[in-house]
Amino acid sequence: MPARRAAATAALLALLSLPTAAQPTAQPPTSPADAPDAAPLIELPLALHLAEDVPDAEVEGWLRAVNALYADAGVRFTLAERHALPEAHRTLRNNRARHRLKRFLRPRRIDIFVVDAIHDPWPSAATRRAAARVGREPSGRLGGAHILAPGHRPDRYAIVLRRALPLALAHELGHVLGAPHHRDPRNVMSYGADRCCFDDAQRAQFRRRARALHRRRDVR
Ligand SMILES: [Zn+2]
Image 1 (tube, helix red, strand yellow):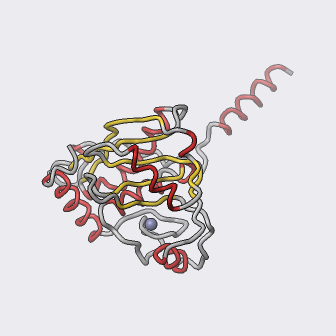
Image 2 (cartoon, rainbow, N blue to C red; image 1 turned 90 degrees about the vertical axis):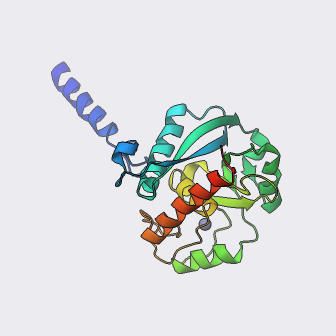
Image 3 (cartoon, rainbow, N blue to C red; image 1 turned 120 degrees about the horizontal axis):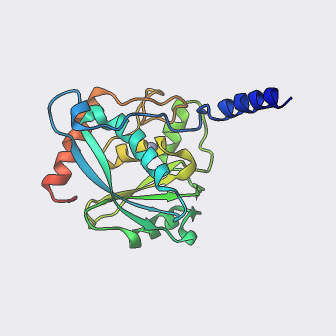
């Protein structure tokens, strides 16, 4: 019966279009008008390095989700530059491979490298502690990492696993803005499964750091 089949097809299409848990939460874009107070948002420019075939819409979705988390801090990340990351640099086998990304750093941008794998054969003490707080052992793989780059402005950059976006990006940007790991498993700066939020002290710190990055001309 064609009519019944059409109805079944419509029902299936409706099911397929339901959002799944793996998708980034749909968040409205933040704008100065959405900020809780009248203070203007401090914009921080990102240079994204990733595979050419990642659709712009996917990138915009990551930024929307990250900016929703940072809106209450009065900080907004903007996509200032996008660069193709060579395939040889998208699977990072060890700490040295993470440091080799320095050759791609862009002046006065917060560089973010989106990769397919970050192996972590020798987990750091900070990684062990953060995993232990949520009852886990380090898995030997990372969802993200931030790397110090003395002499570069700004002096650190971040690497995130594409599969772990957008939350891994929010977490690593927190490190870039000076936040350590957090004990609350719901905090974005933990390794908890249901991370959702920053606390007031973190938000104040992010705003101070964002302002300092501009004052020191570490970003433009
Ligand atoms: Zn971390």
